[in-house]
Amino acid sequence: MIKPELNPGERLDDLMRSGRMIIQDKNEFCFSMDAVLISHFPNFKRKFKVLDLGTGTGVIPLLIADEVAKISAIELNSHMAKIARRNVELNGLTEKISVIAGDYREISKIFRSESFDMVIANPPYIPVKAGEENKLAGVARARHEFTATLEDVVKAARFALKFHGSFCMIHTAARLGEIFDSLHRNQFEVKRLRPILPKAEKNANLIMIDAIVGGNPGNLKFLPPLVVHEPDGSYTKEIREIYGLD
Picture 1: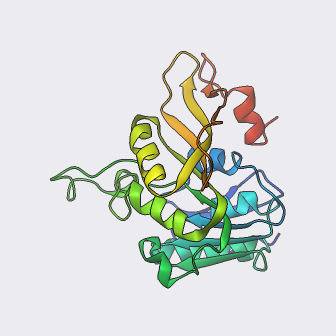
Picture 2: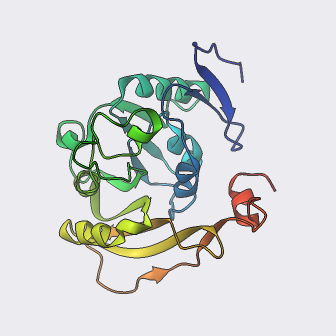
């Protein structure tokens, strides 16, 4: 791979997956562990056509490209979408991954309904409280629901998915009740759920969910917790394996 030209504020990171690299802008929101974890959660099939809602710089498509047939990625921030396109080109994946600069709250203007087998999302987690609009900036702002709410994400996923299609999302565990309510109102049935714990003795702070459009009620698989850190603060064996460190 030829090292790309980087603009001021950009860096090049190793994804530890199939030799892939990713350009990120240090002045924008850089991907976190959440994106890596949700990339390893779905039950992929080679023939799948996948949609990534809110792709950022394209990390999820880059991580799952070996697992599926085609990936479409949508990003509201036009600057981030441009970087995502550069990352697709950098890794030689232009025939498999397409990046669209757009707003998935208006998804019907961008894609045909029920045209994807799977949707993946790592959305903003935190509702915006009254008076917070002008107090948050940078990474903190990116983690709040300024541009899309939980309901927006679920509705976009439902529009995009075929009947019996799969919606995989990572979100904060504290909003599990809201998540189930929104999914049910939009014809989803949760089939797999995995909590994420910062340490074994801690409560779950995140959850990963796999919900099926038109799925029959019941048969929910509550998977063993994914523990991130050992007592000494180092990564657990599973996290190291996910990151390709073992």
